[in-house]
Length: 538
Image (cartoon, rainbow, N blue to C red):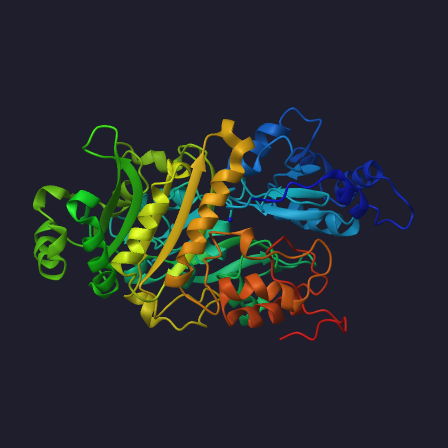
């Protein structure tokens, strides 16, 4: 989901907030003074404040920016980055940001597709939770506490240190921060067996707009519901999550079978659409579409990569696929047995030689990209798939893919309103699209963005409607944004109903209850109901 590149004029207009006529520099100095004045230990907080004049400012800003499209010389930069070491640092930062009218962006892993955890079009600071990464795994009770600044790779590593038969159903990109991933739902290769990461959150610690530290009991069930899929940087700062771990066998099986157009990919994919969501819960499958070199010299073709995780051994998997999906032609040589955590690295495209790569927050190369998402409820006919191939044959799709992730299983059993994430029963699969380009081509980024928009437009016929659903963690500003100032319910619902369907209404009411002045906000954060007569709400 590109972040807006904002001219200086509206920025300068926005900062003229002070009745005293304070300049921007004065306001910033006042903010820094506020941090020192209201900190119990001013020497302590001074060590975690990085202004633009600090030599560590740019390295800290850049280290966890994952989409280089929203990291250019024209991209707005934060006035200050705060990397808190203790909760009081966060409480003080919230208080001083409110007092001096600076917007706050909360970053855990920096994977927001539109950079909303580290970019704003008004004067802002970044609250970077990189130091809040403690993990406590309790194998006896099969639970864990994990702080929002940890990555899911760090979390997985701490689990497998203690158990070979416990896991957690989150994503396969191991550098993703826990805070953003859990707060947006968080799906992964255990989804069909166990549902989402957010489905397994049983408690949380949150600092609200008034600086109070709340747990599930003190925040109440409405707010606890909202933070499990309703998005980060909206309701407060979630410090840590208590989650239930899930059982997995010591040995699982994976495979990848590649089929090109010349190998009947279209018909095989068409068949997969009919059976992927009906396979046993122990079997996860997805399909990735890319353009590759053909066996004919100088020619290109389309490849469909069928990938699977089975919670069991090869000898059980082979007859299952041969019975339910014989068109794939799976043979034993295609399959590999490994541990669950190795399967995460396998699906993430990372070497499995050393598990400690899970601890490397910078193991994956940064990309310059634009992405979008959809949900498919009826199989796309072969003629429709052929239209997709035509889009991938266009020159802008040299580094592009479409991924189709089979739903069904546990996802069909969880009610749509159980959490803010609503995409449950009735979906055959989630479709996501991504196009990337080199950083050197950023000046020409519009041609690649135009390509993915054309693909998205083409898909309209074949995907969910009224609303056209989207996955919040694959953020896409094309589907609608809030205003810099006041945003009506009607305007926010343009994007909100796509991400949350009817759950958007409840999210707005929770926001109105816990943050009525809309302190925690971004271009796609839940707005509160206003007392303005222009907005009568849902």
